[in-house]
Image 1 (tube, rainbow, N blue to C red):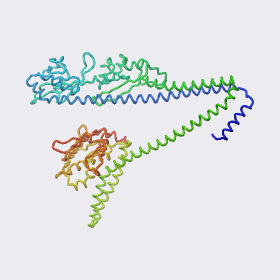
Image 2 (image 1 turned 60 degrees about the horizontal axis):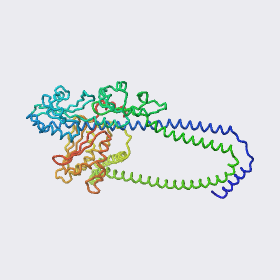
Image 3 (image 1 turned 180 degrees about the vertical axis):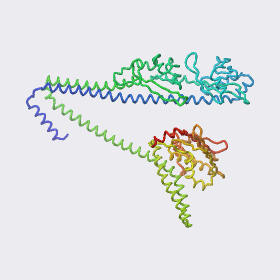
Image 4 (image 1 turned 60 degrees about the vertical axis):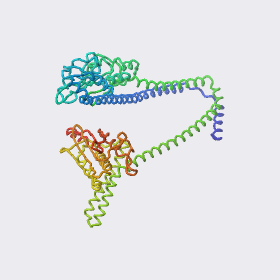
Length: 600
């Protein structure tokens, strides 16, 4: 502080010392204290409302995320075990054992399989429903002639899934498939899926979780007494006594915010999600205990701060009442110390702010450089295709003009104009690779998109003299997607196929479009195949020479297919070459009709 400021402070201090002592006004002090108390109460009230809302939303999001994770684990386990009966039904050793009725090594073979598969148990039944081999030796020679998994498997040509209620409580989940040899049924192979391990894992958390089938019956639950009951009946007859009950016992929710569900008079949060398997649903009950504890912790600190502030206020008031004169005598020294402390704090804060500004500038520059590098690499790759086509069209137009055929050259210029428009669309779509696009999807005919993509690649195909074999269905194959992105994926696959057949004398690319439960597009080439399938869809992975590609095409295409709800896979063909397959959810007529008003 400057000398003039210091002299002004000393003058103020001397004037205070010389001024006549004013009469103390208690009413003014009381008004200030009441105002402080009201301000503290209002602050605590609004802080509580804000934090409860925020922490509740956070807890709800975490509960929904856990449900998504649990449902994914259940679905993955079911899908992984669903293929096992088909493989076991074709096992030569098991078929030979059923033909010869010699089951000496069958049980040991099933035990070796179950360790690799991770299933709960495996069992082999003969045509009479008798257990002739089983990983659980207690079930050997037991009869299963009337069981649903045995009867349904004999009647079906495929794998049958069954949910059987156990006598000891709970449910067993099995896949079964009949074993055939020379069109003769020899027996049935049974695979029991171990879903109880998820119950044991869920029991270690503070949520109550259960899964219901399509009929609303609870088949998996952290609370054993809920199994086999409807949700409403389970909550009414058997209140939760596991982890959620322990969480409720320590809950002291004194707010007026209503819960989703009330168990034993306590509010809990109810979350529900759908499992994409036979109409199953998963639900959980989460206590508000964690929300209340976190809010109470913040409120306790806030109330403690106001209490300290009130204590300090009373302290200074008492000091002022007891000895105002002593306070005036020490005022100058306290002000000088306060001035020095403030100057030190101001200097430290200025230094911290300068360091923070430098750090923010560095971070912003790093973020800009990272975004610039990603976009530059993506744009350089995606624009190679239309630029190559433009170069071909320009060369053709130059020849046509030189031969005095300007009207035919105009068609080449029109195609170049279309390519320029497409380049703009590609750059807009490449931005969505780094940031989620907000554009709405619309029904897309994959046949039309494939025709447009082949038209885009026409100059390269004509130049390379590549034989294209197309197999298209008669009916349109409709999906809900963004057509520009779909064509972008198709062009990337066609371009990779062309690059893979550069060294072939008779290059050939087969394109197959089919529609079933899903829409499937297959692109097959007769090149050298793929060396590293694991890193194929990783960004910047490429086997091309420098300058021919940056390794982003397949990574971008895989990301686009995943955003559309589909899946892209790659494998090597037995006849040679690589095979890329794209599966997208097919759009049925009723879905297309309902999507049109939404798009409008």
